[in-house]
Image (tube, rainbow, N blue to C red):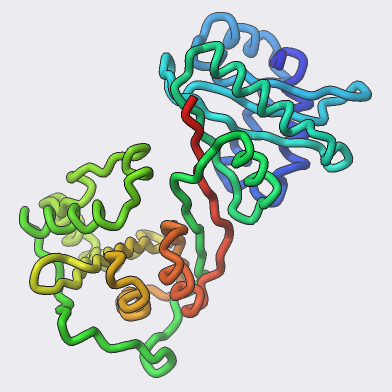
Length: 322
């Protein structure tokens, strides 16, 4: 790809191919491509004097009849890294089925080999069967996935949804802000997250700590009537088997939920915990909820849908070792 010549055509192709899939950040990235394609002096400076941007603009195009009908972006995950990313694989509708996508992928993998890359990763929609088959045939394996769900308004739970009872051998309690519960929450996340996912995105203990800064934030949340963050855990005699974090949205923002359930108890706790979260959020029911949940936790995805959440998309991460 020659950015000085091709960037406008690439932007047009991406817009036509991914029009219904582009979220806010995707639309912003597309606008940036169009802006760069029109400002040739700025683009030239970025290509020749900025290593980061030059790497970002690398890739291949397929051109026929004087127009770009295929594109793929290939760049390092970080400057100087031996891990690479492939993105924006797109083929115009009228040119599909001719092997253009495979040719672009072959060229991309050759480029990664040329630079002695260790691995290459990409993201694909879960319902894009043809693309997944292509990537699998090229040696890519799924390492992770996330289902994105949205609910426009918090529903009333009491009297409408019949929530299951907690199994007798388990106990539900508020999570404590101490080192012991922090360690137990981290251990639960480790037990829940596949090893391949942890290898790619390691879990860090600090992401599961409840610090004193949250207590201060909750004081101000209560003061302005936005609702304090709430945390519950489900435990047996030895460990945590479930975790629920609920953070009401501030000033019209969407609410946040984090649900983690041990694989041994999947299918038993999802409705109970999601229902508890919705009951807690009902006083601020006019705000929506946006969820990003591991795709392999099918029971939770189905439970969210039973409460009225709409699935927007499922995105899968695939990886190939070189």
